[in-house]
Amino acid sequence: MSHSEHKDNVGAKLGMWLFLFTELLLFGGLFILYAVYLERYPHEFSLAGRELNVVFGTVNTVVLLTSSLFAAMAVTAVKRGERGTTLALLGGTLGCAAIFLVIKYFEWSAKIHHGIFPGSSRLLAGAPGESVFFSLYYITTGLHGVHVVIGGAILSWIGARVKRGTLNAGDNVALENGTLYWHLVDLVWIFIFPLYYLIL
Amino acid sequence: MTSDTAEHEHIVSYKKLASVWGALLVLTAATVAITRADLGAAKVWAALGIASLKSGLVIAFFMHMKYEARLFRIILFVALVTLAIFIGFTFFDVLYR
Image (cartoon, rainbow over all chains, first blue to last red; front, side, top):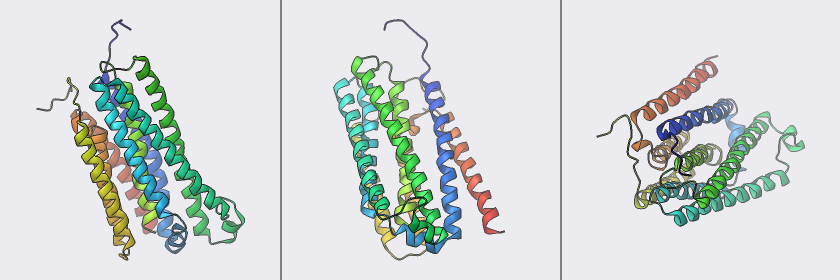
């Protein structure tokens, strides 16, 4: 790859940030819904929120923060030309992503096992605020989980490019943008965690 | 020192990234501890304050916002103000009907 093509890294990152703002407003909308319904059904939200497992939530927070650390370190590694370290760090991020999804799987399974899922007979018979809480819980953490999967796929593709050598110290904006997406996934979780697991 | 066109790229050291991660873990422990206490509505604001602080650290260091051109911070500010307007006007409606 020796042809010289014009590269605008600042422009590429600016475009990525503009995209991240649309994501911010997407999740922001879900947080507004949460806040409005919390104001309307404080008692039901409080009861329903206590069904969530604080330990699962806390462990997943630590796992995601660590995955973000590895992603940020991967950018440092690629800029220093350390290809092996970059790949190892991206592997670490993907490992954390997998752990996060496995924990999420157990968490959702336990809820569904207890008859807590949208349209379940338990929620239909219960207070309206309770079913609103769990609908928002499933849609917010579900959409976040989809972002974890997409982010994992993007970082795997980037890892393959690092391995081939087409993404290197001289041309690494794809890695920077991929990790920016990953950090957004982390940012969203930083707010989901206290709102759903802690304050109720 | 900081020009609007970042012509040289800034490399954040592993050590600095690890200290930010340490701070994020401490803040996570703090938010869990504070919300276990019986503080009523104050714990909501405490938890949101800590979450905002954590977001600031992630954006500034992990996402390199501290080292980007000023334009990046301006558009981040515009996005956050937009979100604040959405939240604010929603509650003007919801709380005073």
